[in-house]
Length: 150
Picture (cartoon, rainbow, N blue to C red):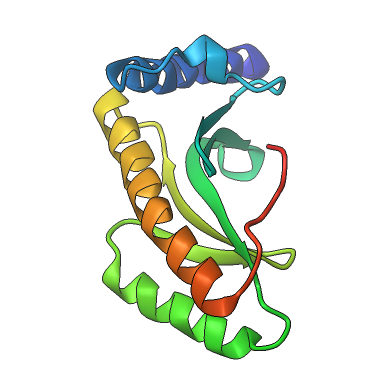
């Protein structure tokens, strides 16, 4: 019974994400990943990943919108991560995180009270910041862009 309820909610949340993509003029079917609840957007070298993450411990589903930015430099990781923290102070509703040697920009929010316009705002915000930060950070620190499949 609970599993059916969660599955229905996730269909509703997926519909919100797909409505947001349509509002942006993007075909959501073309962006769907093989995994349910995941979409991949790519423009030139810029990637934006969208995930619906159901968390059983608190019975909530989260919207995660993120973009892989750059590998953390091995020659000066503290300066790089310090700069990420300073950038976090300046940007709105998004933040850098470091995971498995890479720096990512991301927004994570409970999706329950979000509508399609909120989802679109998160996608646009991550895409905008990533388009600026990826180039600046890879050039300044002479590091590679993260090359992963979502």
